[in-house]
Image (cartoon, rainbow, N blue to C red):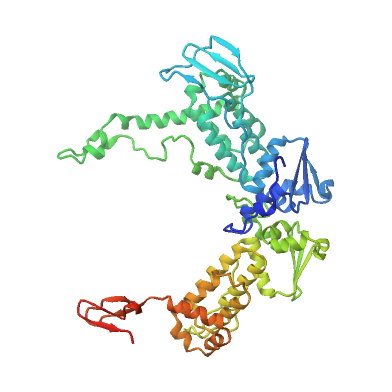
Length: 557
């Protein structure tokens, strides 16, 4: 890609709230683990089958046997490289940008603010520095380039390509961008050209962007019919003319229905005055609502209503700001486009993807990219890690979450735990430790929250003691996220924990745990309640005592 490339460390930051989605953009720029090249005219895009194929089935078909492109190169000579670049950008970022979005390189230098009629023909034309053309009239002066940008046409072309390659989420995004551009670009010739292009290169049944454009044209028909380019386009395209006519007709009916309301007093005001009940004329006039009043521009609900796909898909499309993330879950089960194998000590084999796994874990990425055996075999063996924990770890990499199955509660005693189920506290602790080992900070945050939620059920059990020991022996000393949660709970429940022999034994054998628990207990504010006024005050040992209004005194002995 053009421009200076940033390194993986610069782009794949560890502070992202969820694993994969925000980081996929880095893969496009760094081209790490690319296994597919798309050629279009003079440009090449080094991409990933798992990202491209997951979002576009027509493109996925190109790199499957028996197509020649299955070797890893896809040629798209009939497409525009600039528009294809927008498609690829969307695959990785969930968005696309439009270069040179302004219609004119130089803004208007003078416009007559009192002008209420169409601009008159210019009186002079002169060439100025930079190849611009300056048009000078009596009350109007503007500088513009000879080749103005046409963002409306660009967005329509992106929409058409999204339809060609079956990317409905991109069609919806292009429609939204088109709506935004209409507010400033509708008066240019590109609006007429975009309408003509849209009706010429999309199926008749494809209505999403057409309905937006036609509805807007209907609302601006009076101004547009004064434009020669728009009138000429209507004459040459009867279908578009008929659509605009219908939009104008529908709008005129709405205006006629709402006209009586503008001529009559507001019933909400008149009827509230003394001796002024609603008049018969007010009772009989047409009722209107926000549902049948024309609004401009068309809102997002309009797009959602028309957002549909006609093709059947083998996986669900979940459009979102990140594009890829919600789709990756199915890859874990199917192994589609896999280029990495991971094995665990129980013999289980996972068919994974470097662009998913290595992007979120730098240590695992180093195994694949460094001078290790895994770099040649593309196989990682996690024989030293707990298989159950690894399974949850992998699920998080593909779904940004993980679940531990819950068994029915057999006792109301929080100290009694059903031993047939994986204990929540212990599992979340092990997941946290594995996330620390493989540098997946987002998983550490998720595991900590799940650990905290499980404290109410399992905090006073033997598993809390075991978890406390694990986090102090298998995480770095400066790793405080999970430790602080556990210690706060221990400080608030030290009386109950003091009755547990295993907790006391842990404190005796691990001075660091004992020291931290004592600090947690000492940091908890103490309070005393007066038996007379029930007033509660915080006790400060430095003051030795406190008194209330009733003279109640508490001494520290």
